[in-house]
Length: 367
Image (cartoon, rainbow, N blue to C red; front, top):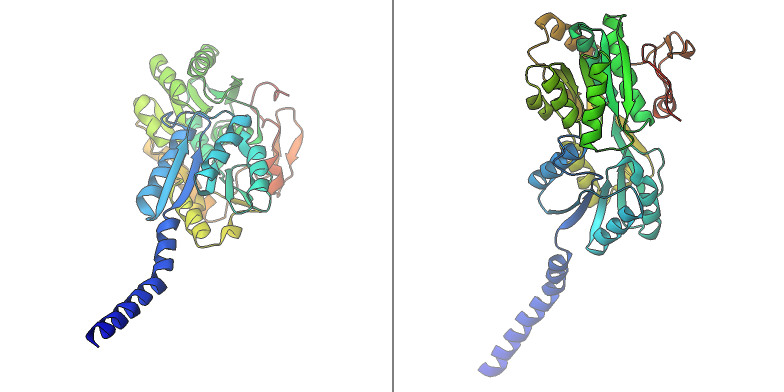
């Protein structure tokens, strides 16, 4: 009788274990939520890829249960599609393809993997499981222009750019527009190097701009460090782009700049996708500016007088309060044509398709 009772008890216990076990096994199999990040350049470029990677590190530190994959130096070719496929095969359910030229590849991959969310940085197209995000960094570039217009002694600004895409033109125009609003004598000269990251070409372009009279240099490069270092060597001023950490490469000549803060956004997107709410980020564009806290003006350098700092911060508050919009009309291009009429504020489409130079920029936009 005892043996029969013992066997019965053991059977009940085993049955209870078996009832619980499938769910436990499923949880173990499921493991961590996997997220992929892809960069077109090196993660230590102190620029675009560096700041996205700082966001990745923030995500890893602040969201338990997440496993992150990262690939750097991936060209804007079929190679990035292959990398995305590899990440998905390893279990990625969310991928951040961070470079401008990755968008078409992301959409192609999305068609093959409808259960994966792909959230692209700055793109102009979306699909059922591909969305885009961006923060209008031209706001802090405009504010930086206010300071640069007061600091410059030659009234010539120089800009080293990669490609003449709308986001680049926004920043060239914003910096110029800000500088000229406080110093109408300012002109801007631009050199395109045709690559997101080529330190030698960037340094050469920076030297050429200084030789043309520029005493303030800025850049829209994935790796802006060579431009800042060249400015330091030549004794001219710097307006940073992408990262406030660039200041250490030109301490004496640092004015200010634009600074990404992607971490909190990456946490929010990942939380939503993990919770089954990827619709908040795919099949749509997500845009914002200074009010998001995900882009900001960098700290001022010692060359910026206190009264100028106060002036810049006052204008920043006007933007945050909705009392001022960068690029509001009337605004003309450098050929004299009215691009934004008096009293108008640019639409999403007008900003995202900008293909002209503002008044004060020398030359034509390359085709």
